[in-house]
Image (cartoon, rainbow, N blue to C red; front, side, top):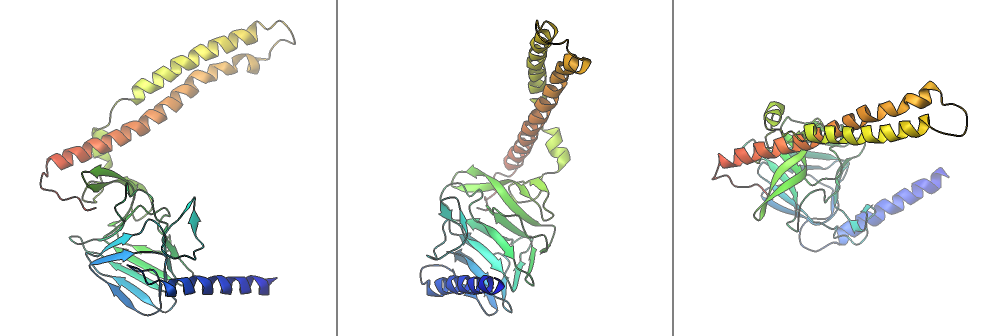
Length: 281
């Protein structure tokens, strides 16, 4: 059985590598078997495998545009109805961004870039180091074994600004959820708090009122039931839990809305103060 599994694995890897080697279209979609450096503008047309023993170095200021569909005809990673691009690291990947020249991985301009390519997969023995980089639209979180600086962000959601996109919401290098200013820096929690709305104090009371009405009629139907044994104390008083439960649900839902609103207002204020800002995407 193990021999069969190994044989299948070898065939799959060989088939995928052959498909990458046969690709001769625009951009990059292949196996990197020796040390390689990227700089400037790079178009990633399909799946990329950094083989064991090879290292891909991405220099500061490099912009990697990721195709929305894998150009390789033979692929084994499928999401929904489309084939997405992924970067598999069995060797080494070094992303050397700078504060004034970050490395950007972004989907090609064809609608919103939110969550449109798979992201990075780190194989056993592979290494991924990154500093000052934005990974826009990656479906998978960054590998936990990757060595990341504080200025590495995965952008899950963007805002459209004319023909460009602004980073809006995603995760920082530690995997925690975060909101971004248009230049990629994090919006502080205290700034979001200062710009929140008050929808939680509207939604929660409304749901509480609806829950109270429901609790009243449920309680009345229990108290005046004509058939069967008399209800126990637990059966008689459980409807009293409905209003506070509704309040909690309404407050949490409203709090999420207020947080998004606070981040958006903070971003709008940031943009108004910087009329000459050039969107990065």
